[in-house]
Length: 88
Image (cartoon, rainbow, N blue to C red; front, side, top):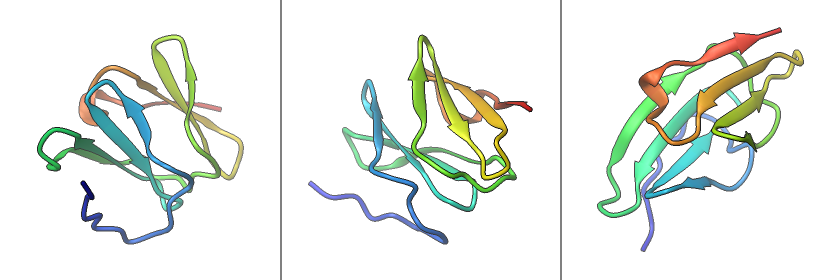
């Protein structure tokens, strides 16, 4: 099966699978979460910073690195809109 992605930027890498979701991060800071069962967008968040690489899973969190070296932390098992925290 394939997903139609409404992208306004370039992927930072392949989707990250977390449970029944696929998380897609774009260079412009947009992060989408797709439901792998029905192909619908579960969640969307723009973190307001350009992302430089794929998220890194550390424990129960996903860490996103921005082009200025900041880290954005998201809970790995929850939807993207549950809240991002930025750490410089």
